[in-house]
Length: 147
Image (tube, rainbow, N blue to C red; front, side, top):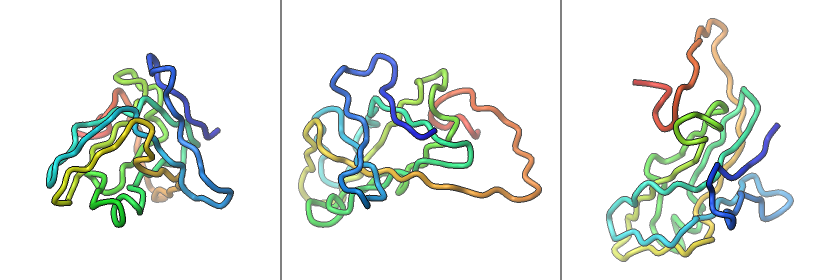
């Protein structure tokens, strides 16, 4: 089952990701608040108030929208591609709330207005090795799969 949902206590006007066209691979993700990112700096971590459910052998990859990286500025997601694991939704630390940080590489501030499309996410299948022995269970939110 693949679907998006607002996290607990999300504002009532939270926008869930959606595709713009029939053949879009990516789901547009909307910024939940006004954000200004000064030149050559990182934004704060911005909780999007959404979570995503997917199949166990999938992840949800989030990348910057091409227009934000080229024609409208020089913006990127801080880690390149954000990877949301299938077991992240409903975790006990933050209910699976997806958060993003952006880096503004331009010489002028970048301004998001609440409701702007800030990124796009794509469901992706992945493989594991034949001798994989992973047995851990997620116990929390950001960074909880490693030390």
